[in-house]
Each structure stands twice: as structure tokens, then as C-alpha cells.
Length: 217
Image (tube, rainbow, N blue to C red; front, side, top):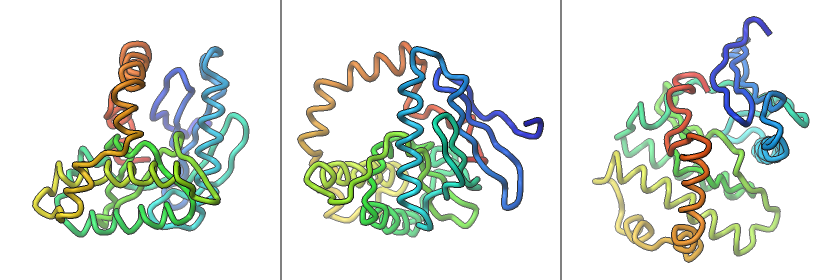
């Protein structure tokens, strides 16, 4: 569409802003993805669609408008990515922790909160979690779910340590000092390969997308 604004284009397709009421929508489109990654791009899109559908109506998550094999449309969210906003108010983190608990209670783990661009700061100063391509959904919230939820919490607390360290409680400091065995194993075995693929081959970084998303995500 002519009035759509391209926010990002890579091997996995495009992300566009479609203007409309209440800011419009964000469109994730995999039709232009590279053929060799298209199955993965569609799989990631499907994971995001399932997570957003599960979180329907939950504060702190964008609303899903529609989804198909190659297209996902979600509500636009006004806000600045964390690395731009640099939230230093303890109230922001109290709200973020409440919203993260509700996200987990709904049966969703985000799995990508280490990236600051995936946490927006709204004009009112509230947190919004975006980009659910790696999210997991579980009805039963078993042991693996609980471990991943713990890692979501640790990543959020790492951001709090970066911008609001004085407000960390003793319990939160203990959590930061104790990564799960899954996290330790990932760092020792999978992470070097992950970084080689994402940074060397795909050109990503931990703050990938920050400049593109800006105030409109």
C-alpha cells in the first residue's frame, strides 16, 4: 500500500507501519523473505501470532489484528525503545514486573527480553513488550516453561540493573547472580554459534532494530 512506511527489511521479509485510527497497525510480511529462510520466517511469524492471540487484551502486549501464513498484522504501539528512553523510574520496573508475571500467568514466555528494543516505554512511562517471534506458549506451564520464565525475569532485571540499579532488592540481586542451568549451558555451547550466525552471517546485533522501530512499533 502506498501509505505504508517501511520500518525494516531483511532476509526474513519486511515490517511496515500502516497508518490508521489510534496510530494504525504494524505489518510483518514474509512474502519477500529469502527462499532459503522462508520456512523459518513463516515459523517465527506463526509463533508470534500464537503468542499475541493468547495475550489478547493483556496490558503490555500489542493486540493481534489478523494473521496468515505470510502476514501478521498487530496494533501499533506508541513508545520509545528502552535503550533510547533509558527508564530510571523504579515505578517503570514495578509495572514491568507485574506485566511480565501476567504474561507468564497467561501461559506465554517471551524468550527475547535480553534485547532492549523489545521493551518499549510508552508516553505515559509504562512498559510494553513487543516482538514475540521467539515466544513460547504452554497451557500447562511445566518445568521448561518455568525455567524460561525465570530467564525472562533475569533479563528484565538486567535492564533494571543498567538503568535503576539502586532500586534492586536483595532478592532481585540474588536472581541476577544465579542464572539457570539452561542459561549457563546456552552460553557455553549454543551462544557462540548463535552469535556467529546472527552477527557475522545475518548482520544482527543485540540492539538490532532499535533505529528502525524508533517511536513507532
